[in-house]
Image (cartoon, rainbow, N blue to C red; front, side, top):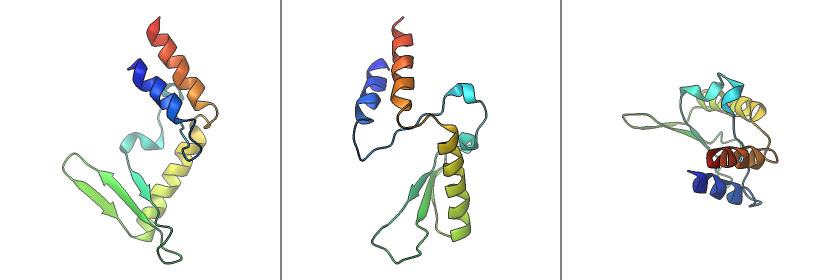
Amino acid sequence: MRAQLRHLVHLAERPSLDLQVLPMARGAHAGLDGTFTVLDFPLELPGDPGTVYVQTRLKGVYYEEAVEIGEYRQTLTRLQAEAATPAESPRVISRIAEEMAA
């Protein structure tokens, strides 16, 4: 697992990637319901809200209604605000990897 954590730190150096971690010490948060992916399509029609993909235990679900997508975007915004910044996150991950070595 340490190698995986170090790999994440290395990936965080890419300019096209923003890596943020939400430390467990922050407690309950809006992402506890499960994972989701917000998909934006820049070449689509202006005003297109995008799509949200949610993988449940039974199947993948796509949300395409603006209201549904808005809920997930608000959740993503809250998670980003609660998480360590992209500058802080690699340090958090590195610290965890070092603690595993001890």
